[in-house]
Image (cartoon, rainbow, N blue to C red; front, side, top):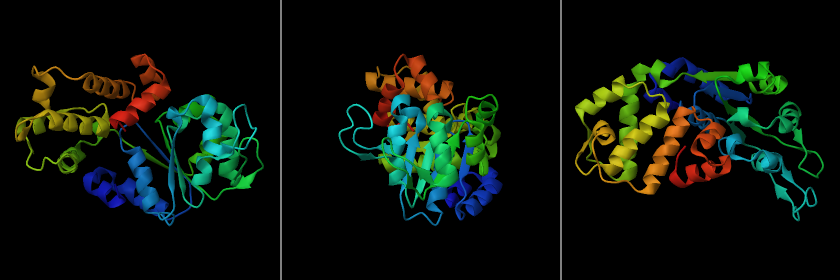
Length: 299
């Protein structure tokens, strides 16, 4: 979604997005904080697309989806013999982002052991692949983090010097419960997008359902809103869309895949997008959760 589209659907963010447009034109690093599902990653991608680096790669790294023991090799790459089983060299995500932008999602999940190396890359534009020599890397950093990242840094759960390097320009995205004036446009945007994607152009939202959606607190933010509409759209067999009825009425037995997808969405909403906590709640590993999110298209 472009900055213009974000502004069209979220007029309450007008001041933030004006600042984002100015930031996009610079080379400064950007840190975007907020609750999961508020559109943080969408804003980061829009910043890259509006920047002078738009023609080059945007490489995304989800720190919550990479096992701690593999994080450094995944981010920085490695040379032959760097560790047992490293027979060949492999470039990391940083190398893929040279000339473009590196988006660090769930930055609060970056392992403490890897943070000094990332700090050097941020401050000096240099890094060393595991088992290799230092190289230069022209990369712009876009970071997405939890609302409490400053508090984590203050108590030592995240390197304070790295936090200050990341927060050159910082934007905070408020949750939907604080942006109620945006709800009508967001509902219409997701309806238009989903009806086109799913090939259901004649579906309309029931008046009672729209009233419910305008009054709902949306603890899962934009992610929850989209999932509610998509689920109702997939399951409805009439021309009128009523996600409330679909949530409450007796319906056909759902497939295990549908149940699993819904429970993952609920766990992520309950833990406010925290991958580790959601995985623990579901009784699976973080890697398994990440694989299932990719399989079901859960952002």
